[in-house]
Length: 243
Ligand SMILES: Cc1cc2nc3c(=O)[nH]c(=O)nc-3n(C[C@H](O)[C@H](O)[C@H](O)COP(=O)(O)O)c2cc1C
Image 1 (spheres, helix red, strand yellow):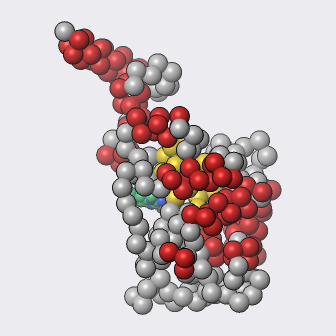
Image 2 (image 1 turned 120 degrees about the vertical axis):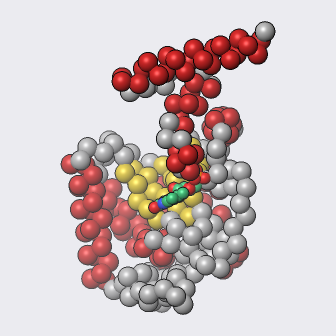
Image 3 (image 1 turned 180 degrees about the vertical axis):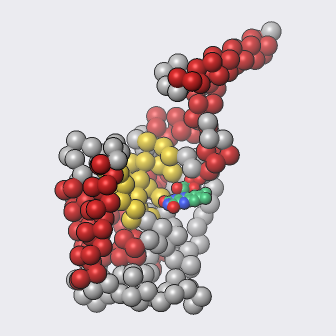
């Protein structure tokens, strides 16, 4: 199923354009997932509304060519995503935070979602109860021409945070603790997410804390001996540099 009966590419399956009964069934499945997350004790949940997944298929005009109330203007394309978000928010405890991941740029110019649209998309999710916007981009169209580089999606987070006054998470090719701190201190995001650095080094955060001489990072109890040794090695290396 998708917003419209448009395959991702000629090589992909033809999805069914969702009708009202499909929408109600899928909303109920999202709500059931929220209830399971609460029973499992999660502290925070995120609605994935990016990267060409189902909710994203409604938001992007590249995948949504509907002519009913759920297609056309950005307001219309946001109607079903906001229905799902509100239903989830109502099922999730009010005191627990909820985020939403968006594609802030379809990377197809004015034929798709632009960073300007993303500010409005973020505002709409915030008004529906999103506590923080997880600002990703792309993967919504095979026509996309993304411009990669260090911290390449951070400007979209910056715009949403500073134009709409909303809390954001920045993500995308952020690889250094110095970059994380610069993004936070410059007010370009409220949280920073790193994905691939953790595939290369699952303890990236703990190692960064050693490098930054951060005393406040919590280590799991069985790892404390490793933390203390890593700190000693760091101090010795610093001492060697001074000598
Ligand atoms: C192997 C792999 C699988 C991923 N799967 C997902 C996914 O299912 N959903 C998602 O939102 N992002 C997914 N991502 C994207 C990451 O969440 C992240 O946005 C992206 O890798 C950019 O951040 P990074 O430069 O720190 O890796 C995946 C990334 C990798 C490398």
